[in-house]
Amino acid sequence: MFLKVTNLSMTYDKKTLYDNASFSINRGEKVGIVGANGTGKTTLIGILNGDIIPDSGSIEFDKKIKVGFLDQYLRIDKNLTIKEYLHKAFDELNQVNQKSIEIQEKIIKTTNPDELDRLVNTLSILQERLEDGEFYQNDSKIMRIASGLGITKYGMDTLMGKLSGGQKIKIILAKLLLEQPNLLVLDEPTNFLDVSHVDWLIKYLKEYKGTVLMVSHNQEFLNEVATSILDVEFGKLTKYKGNYQQFEIKKAFAIENHEKKVQANIKERKELQEYIDKNRTKTSTARQAQSRQKKLDKMENLQSLSVNHKKLHLTFNYQSISSHKFLEVKDLEIGYYFSLLPPINFQIKSGTKLAITGFNGIGKTTLLKTLIGELHPIKGWFKFVDDAKIAYFSQEHEWEDDTLTPYQVISNLYPDKDAKWIRSELAKAALTGNQTLQPIKTLSGGEQSKLKLAIVMLQRANVLILDEPTNHLDHEAKDSLLELLKKYPGTVIFVSHERSFLNELATQIFSIEDLLIS
Image (cartoon, rainbow, N blue to C red; front, side, top):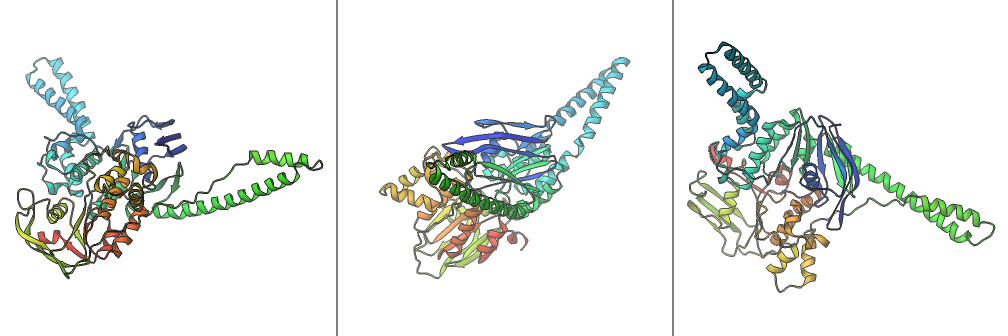
């Protein structure tokens, strides 16, 4: 068995994530881990890599395999260039190469025939290891994956310390792919990839010879890559054969069959209890009643698996606007210290749902940050209508104080509001119960995104500027957000790597890539 998890149990903040859950992964499988936000998907990854200790249970890996985890919080040397960092994927072969260089230097200096024979033999062994490991193809391997993920656009000599969080994660992913572990464990690998690079990753993983375990809310991605789905729900880890679409069908049938058993169980228990209550005091039937009581005591009390997934019920605080012409951008050049792109020109009307598209790292986030005033234009100008009010959603999960709870965050923003109002507003973002009282740093990525959406929702605005708003959100939340934004009367300017979300929401598209070929 490649990976076997047995009787895994984990309770966090009085919430049962897993209750004696078991599953196994076979060699060569591509397994997608799915479930609603907060059910324990990322916690499962943490348990597998040893960062989190479960309450009970065992995790067994094949001792011969190499396991690689996509660690989005990995500390890296900021002084390394991108190319130097990616070359670290071949550290073992690099050491062999360094040893071979040292042997070659000794050969040049050696005059003893016996010592020379020994050194030549050692060098031959080292060279064979380098050739078997395709060491001399390392540069081409790096460029293939860096190009596929859009990393070459950053400049391979760029220091890691100058990159954004999303760019670093892409490079960490690239290094992991270059290492080619037997088991590849990925947590939301598509979050910081644009559509074309998601397509590249899909093709890469489908051709990948190893085993893949991946947490993802991207259904299109899972439909293409996954050969099995591991569903995290009801405290269980249930494995289904097939891709995401097949999983949804099979799960629906499984729940339907289970509910039939639950109803039959309820009916039988009721009939037994009615007989017992009616006959336990009668001398002639007391023995039969006692027998039925024993049967009832031994019966499993089946519980319904039907669950109402928490949907978003955001009520954006829309402020009406008097002007039809909403935003004009004229010869705008954006960047931090120099222009990243040719001059940008476009204009939109009030109520437009504008999608900003382009490969990752081209400047989509930089454009959004310029429009909200966080960055100053290098040249040119843009102008919103005078009574425009902006609410901004950042893709980065960065908080001034991540020890605060969602309740405290909203309370600090609206100190005049009472507890009932605060809880009601958080509930609209599908944050309820203990979720509202947990420190932000303990919340899942999806739960943090929902808190950010709650903050956006409460701001009085007529334009929502959203940078990858679906990152980390589960299927139900994404569908809810899409419908809410489609009905929103104001303007939406957004970036999204999810093709279906972009296509369904956008009424106008501005492609930054077109600037480079015009």
